[in-house]
Length: 158
Image 1 (tube, rainbow, N blue to C red):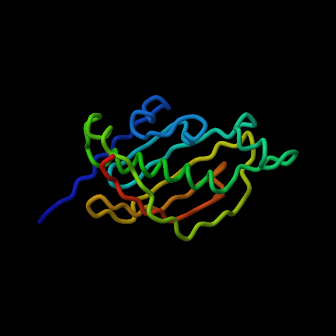
Image 2: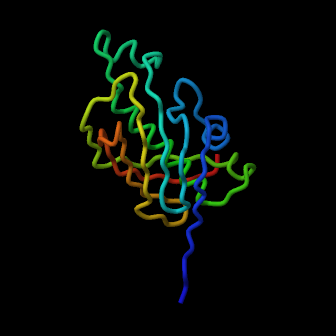
């Protein structure tokens, strides 16, 4: 009988550690902290949404709403970190890889996200085969589901 053991990292990653894994930078780095990772299983992290975010200059003046596409991108970035952390790569190996998102399906937006909200991402692995990952992404504000999507990604050489 083969037993699969999932390594629970239960770690916190700050924005500097996040930047060691994914290539995104201001203003497109959309994850401030990772609060929990279980390899091959799940990741929880968040972004603090502030009125200082550039997107609010045009979305929408006088009625600031965080764009849904930015919520999906934050989910994708969190999913990329989960995939990298699950693959036990060295920093050098990870530096030569990048995550390409292949599809985003079943996206739903259930409530608006506003400045002052803490957008929590909860990402779960649906399946993984080789370099391909299928992830269930959910975004919450104060435990209220605000968005969800199924994400498919592939880790490739740069």
